Image (cartoon, rainbow over all chains, first blue to last red; front, top):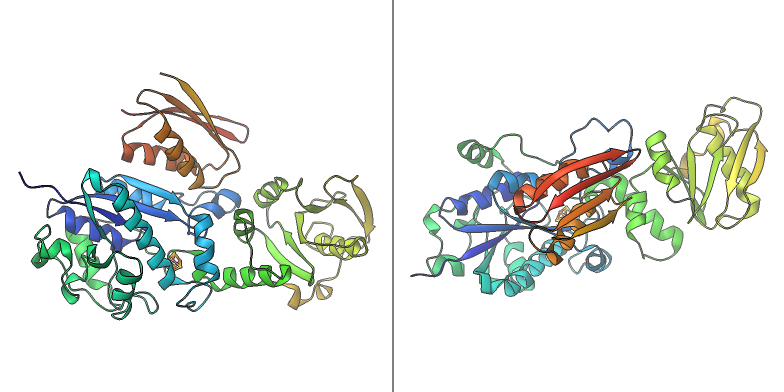
Length: 350
Length: 75
Ligand code: SF4
């Protein structure tokens, strides 16, 4: 009896990885999926927090893709290890803080580890939905061998959607996979993928515009860089990553930033941080909760309180009552006139 | 068969799924795991994860802001 060779597929939840898996399934290859959670992945976080987004569909695209394909999916928390990828990308960043090429190399290298661990269960190779020329930074003709080489995958990395444009890999050379039935997609044109999706009966698949994570987003990247500059260090924790997605961010002084909730859902989310951070809230009128990241001096409480008051219902009042709560200290109450709109400077907005 | 509880409060998806997946790896078929979470997204993600990986969601309970999803390990 010939040995069955199985593949592990990098699943992002997008169409390309969906197709790559199905192409191999058509050849009778058993595939399982692996998905890496860096903390920056575009998932339902903000939906979970913001009121206005509550009705939006909340599905995890990687799980959805796996279910469509009828494959198992292993989700791996790589938050800690990913820090080094983001902070020290050998190949640099894309248009924003996205280190796409290093990210791909890292993920494929994690898949190589997985294959080694699960070799006894029949796993011999890795597939991805990469397409030559699809993405300007990480999916180019020149980057294909870089990903294969630097990840340590070498010839066990197969890209079913563009394999015919690449040198033969081990699964093809050994006859585990029929190269003739693989594809030669290239470039940014998505029509061939869409046609193939139709042929396989996939509809309703996710098609993120920028990329698979928040690091491709300019706004998010700006906030991340501001956070690092404000702290004078590029350290970050999971809470930091989440908080960058919540509220409006203003930095009235270099040493502290204010996160001001935009709705009740965000206020509630920030509530959870009361024990760790200084929080400021208008109590005489309805208004958002605000959290201070960084070091605020007592002499700046009034400034911060005036700003928070600007975003509450008492914005036009002569005076509002504001509570400043510092963890481990008694709550202080300040009476203050909310700042006028022109007093909240444009350059404070992160 | 034993009962277990997993605290996934304040975690945002997909963390509750990852924690559930990792906990289930330590359990045996037939064990029951109650996952307590606050992200409503878990209500679609944990059942999807269970269907894919051959586990059974026995049900869920919502009270106030908390959500408890009960999973039986294996079919
Ligand atoms: S978009 Fe984000 S997750 Fe996707 S390859 Fe780039 S850095 Fe990695």
